[in-house]
Length: 213
Image 1 (cartoon, rainbow, N blue to C red):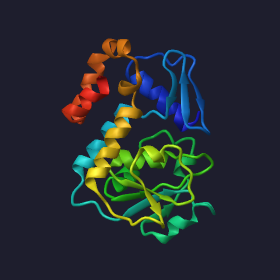
Image 2: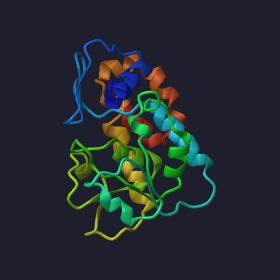
Image 3: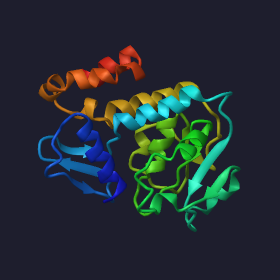
């Protein structure tokens, strides 16, 4: 099973929505569900919760860049930045579905997360950066179908400057476009309202209202 399908099934399971008939188009980064139709990449609320707990526990200010992953020829531009680690962790079948606390701890401490695309015109790392409160950095030539919807930095054409306001806006957009509470139709929101509200404490009141509207 690919990580994309794992995340989608987990997000559905959190709200008691059937996983039967689930399909994915991995290259396009989209999901399909018999009741919900065509959906974008979906992130489980529980993963947002765990990342937020690390963000809240972080000591000191955010600083610098971070990248950990496979560095192919197309991704070699990341070597121009500090705090770059080569790793195949995400490709390990025994580990790839686990929450890597060390990885996320470093991510929530960074201002910027390098998010090069790989074999597909999108990346998990792009969304992980946003969930962690970092701003994604992509190369000018990196395709990413989701990038136009968020604030990103294109290297080397754009200056690398951090904005907490823009990072927060990115997170808001992710919650409103890539989580089950914001994607399910109204009648399902009513059925699962109690579960949706259980996660409310980790979001601002306004965002919570927008997610269930």
